[in-house]
Length: 99
Image (cartoon, rainbow, N blue to C red; front, side, top):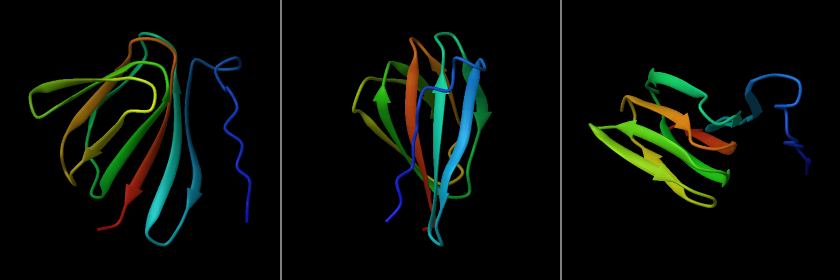
């Protein structure tokens, strides 16, 4: 068993993207963004599951926008290009899963 802390990192820097754990079948990351900050369009070779722990974030993909709030989840297929922008302070968990 292992406790992993995901305290607010935005006091010391404007954006936080950090890997929490690497497993044989998945990587788990924590992303924290202030309002207006984002991550440009990219894709992943893996399936991705996003869990919004706090905040409001706009994901763009497949020519559509997805506005996610506290406790919402988003599944992204491998190689599906997407980007995101925080509407307000946002804290998300990203699970990159080997299919």
